[in-house]
Every structure is written in C-alpha cells, then in structure tokens.
Image (cartoon, rainbow, N blue to C red; front, side, top):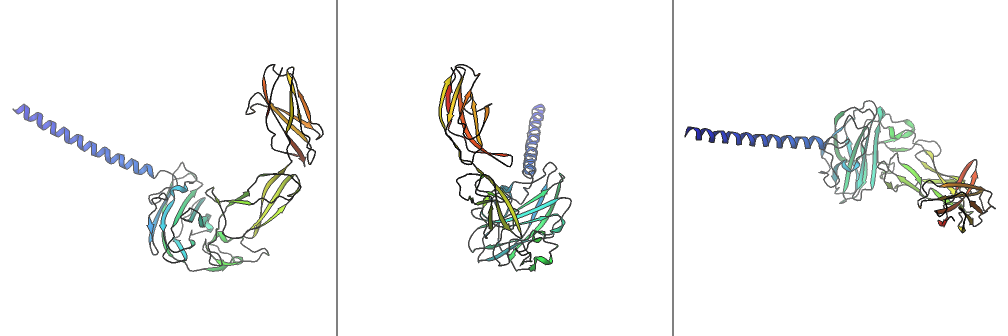
Length: 381
C-alpha cells in the first residue's frame, strides 16, 4: 500500500512538472514571436499594416517607438509603417505634430499622409541636424479616410531606438519667406521663384502658401517613354513621377516643362521646373527600323536581304544565332545605309539559324539603334 501511494504521488508530481514546463515553453515561444515581429527594420510596436492601423481623432496624442537593427542600414518596408488611421469630421488642414527629433550621425525621418486609395496627400522628411521636426499637414476632406505613415533611416548600421510623441491637431499656418532662411526646416532651403526671389509659405511640410496640400517630395522623374522613333516631328513624352516608395504618382500642382533637341536622332532632354530650379530628364530618339525581305540558304551559310532605310541612318546591325532567344549571337555591322545584304559563311551544315536586323545612326560618337526586325529562320545547307 505504501509503495502504491508513493507511485501515485510521484505521477502527480511529474504531471505538474510537465504542465509547468509546457507553460514555460508557451511563454518563451510567445516572447520569441513578439521579439521577432519587431526585428524587421522600420517596423515597431506601434506600426502596423494598412489593414490594422490604429484609429485616432483630433486631439489624440500617441507615441512612435522607432528603431533600426544593427544589420539593417535602411528601412524600406512602407507596407508596415502605418501608425494612424484618421477620418476628419470637417474639411480643413490637419497636422500630425511631432516632438523634437533626436539626431545622431546620418539619420533621416520620413512621414506621409495617404488617402484611402494609398495616394500620397503630403510628405515630410527630416535629414541631418538642420531639420528638427517632421510635422506634416494634409488638406483633408470630411468623412474620408486617411493614414499616417512614418519611416526612420539610419546610415550607420548601429542599433538605435527612441520615442517620438505625435499629436493630431487642426493646423495653423506659420508663414515665412524662404529667402530669409529657416534653420529648423531644411526642406525650405533654396525654394525660390523663377526670378530667384523668396516665396511666402507655411514652414510646416505639406502645407503650401495657399493652404492647399503640397507634395514636398524628393521624388524622381523620368520620361514616360525612354525611346521614341524618328519621324521628323518634335517628340514630347510626358513625365512620370516616382515617389520615395517607388510608386508612380501625379503631383497636385503644375510643373513647367521644356523640350530640348527633341526632333532629330540622338539624346533629347526634358527640363522641368520644381521649387526654384530646373531639372533634366533624358530620352532617346532612334532611327526607323527595317524588315528582312528574304533569307536564302547556302552551303554552310545563308544570304539575307533587308529593306533599305536611308532616312537618318548610318548603317545596319545584323544578328544571327542557333538559339531562338539569340543567346550567344553572331553580330555583324554593315556600314553604309545603301548596303542591304549580307552573306554568312563557315556555319554548321544542317543547323537552323535565327536572323534579325536593325538600323543605327552614329551621333557624336554614340550609336542609336532602332528596334529589331521580325525574326526569320534559315537552315544552312
């Protein structure tokens, strides 16, 4: 009887230990998952996806817990940078007002307000010790949904974390003339009109001098068409604007453009005026192409003829390959736009070859090529 009692107590004790161990393991797993969820650069305890963004209203104050890990130089995950979901009750200018920023080494803060379709309403950044805030304003409509996003960048590979307090409030303009300088708002440097004069505007990013939303973005612009074919007429492709997330957007303000060398074959330029300076974007004008007229099989080779294209051309380039995707092709340059045939020799008998041709023109030492002709096939005898 004593032995049975001892065995029963032992079994109960072991079961309790196993249960305690399971609880401990569960807690550890939960802790590991929590730590792992914070290990991605730019994703913090408060940041969320668009779907899970916390809801806030005017007057709310909340804290951003920002940090970067040792092995993450730049945070780019904007999909996990949603800190607030906001729906104003009235039309107006609303500001996400931040506390004093902490700067060390090379750091950069970026913030933006986007609408329900994820279009950027306004954008703010702070880079280096000349910008102490990332206060941002958006001209928002009553009843519509908006989101507030923030990213923190670090060029120094060191682990670093800190908190920033944010308050949502109705915005009041803080007007200043940009010619007078604004030491705590780096984004206002060098903003002048076409005559070099300063502009009266609100110092808070996202708020223009007219009170409407402005997209103060270090965006990139490119030609909507990188290559256009010569036809004797001026080429004026539109500009594409790419925001800091790598997404195309349409600015909500007018941008002046000028086109230079945009008729003849060569490199053309689009100049666009943005906040006190002219910027340049390049695109190419290339010659009109040609088509293969006939390919004739010959002993260990073939002869190819193509249509003459003498307008704005210097010559032709021919390619032929054993592979349909033109892997490891043979390349032949035919100088002179009057020469319209070529004979390939010393090839493998019975081998099938893929052939194509294009025109080119040399301008200032650089060759500009047309698009390729349709591909023809031939089997060497």
